Image (cartoon, rainbow, N blue to C red; front, top):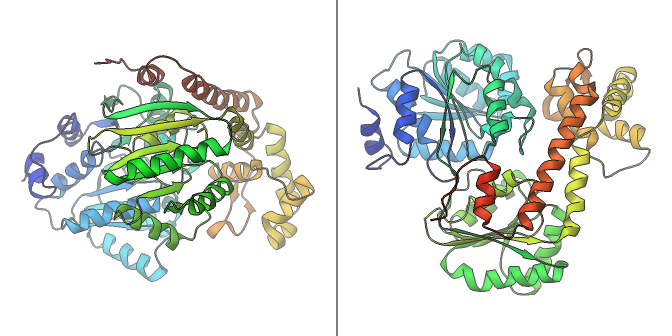
Length: 479
């Protein structure tokens, strides 16, 4: 049987492991659970891909399967394509597949094909998927972007909180959870949500320092000063690579795009309102270097492994230090000097405070939405979410609380939203957790505290990397 070192060289083309990769891999191969925190671009994926191939080495019948749970369809597609190019039997199953393709892959999985199978957590809602997976021995469960597990994290995905159920359905396999960012509180929550204890899951923390990144904050007043700084970066720093400018709102991104076009600055735009094919096209031209500058919302970034990103500019204030660090981590993966600039205008805080309000409805609002759905099934079925919005707000409102409530009702199995969120069927009583005002107040305070920490970072006069390390509970050596 080929060992980790052989597979690293023969399959992935690397001479040696880096950092704690080999230690993590041998830990997992010994059947031990691992929580891996490793800077973006440092090779987290190898920590589960190599064990998957070791498990399956030389096995042709009843081969062990590694399940990889990933939050983004584009991310898993990129990883699978890269593995298939190396002759690794990997596949993904998600909503991007047509029914015929999906059924074909189900049959292949049931017949023992594939060593790695990538899925979103929503796939575990499908009885046909559970039926197929029950026919395979799952030797390893890998949870990518594991910070999405934590309701207290910066990128919470409700379905990730069912991972303890998923593990049980898979026979409680060896589990590895991976992320680039997690405070001590989020680390504890990840372990808890997986149905494990700190004694059962070993933490491997590579630290978060990226010595080649230069972190700066520039105080600006208004869009004109922001535009001037972006134009400066585009004219002077794109000769040696690429750049990303992050915006919070699509409408602001679009306005800046128009002004940059008028200034003769070529670029592409990436955001959630684009069709899936258009988003894919933008990502591909950026990765190939044909469009070195991209204006993007935070929808852009997971799985972007481009080595020569010379700058990441935040044109708006991000919502937390975790999301900020995650996004600047896309810069300088080739190890060369790269700039990470936050353009700080305190007026931008209003937008983030609105986001916090939208993601933290109070108990009364949860109950009101639930009662509305229970009492009016015919109207909801006929007119959908637009009718619910009209009853709640009286008019079209810029208020995202309803979407938050529906997502959480869905997560707690109070509501079935149906395919593509086209139906809303009440399944049972509202969860007491959702109408526990004390718990909701704690969540709101946590989100507000995260934003305040970002403000403190922006106004910090000392070493910004030391500030970030302190926030994540890590020692820092300025040398």
